[in-house]
Length: 180
Image 1 (spheres, helix red, strand yellow):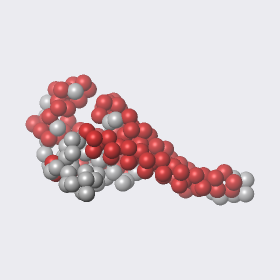
Image 2 (spheres, rainbow, N blue to C red):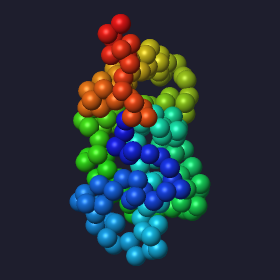
Image 3 (cartoon, rainbow, N blue to C red):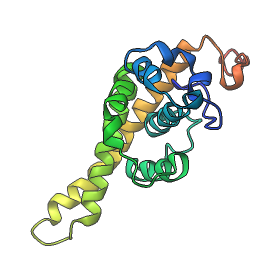
Image 4 (cartoon, rainbow, N blue to C red):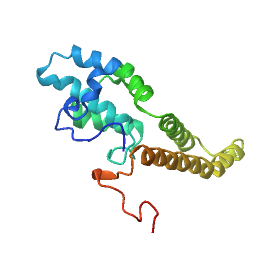
């Protein structure tokens, strides 16, 4: 399970994830919000969590970062000109303080894969660059294998830290514990 315990954007981020109220930059951001019920900062925190968290509960995890930003700005924040850069310090803090080393590595690799895919898609295939592009295409499977390896490592970390609990808080069955 991810850092954020529930992706219910209709509920205050601060109520669903109260420990964020006391964590460094998040605490400062929370205290500085003068809106009713801390609603403005709650929306921004949901935006950051939806942007950065790759937990299975986050249905936006399969979209590119650019598409996630667009969807979040338009549908959650309701401002298609939302200034992500204004909150970059919170995004950076979220990544550094809330994600494990494995999750940060996976995040970086996914971002580079997006850049790589964009590059390959926009680069014209010519005689002078054919060999380089062919090599890039040939190496794609290796990179996806690395992503899968990191995902499995993260899943293993989360299962170990979960104390035998699975989604919904239930205990693992004997089959899930590989006892039968």
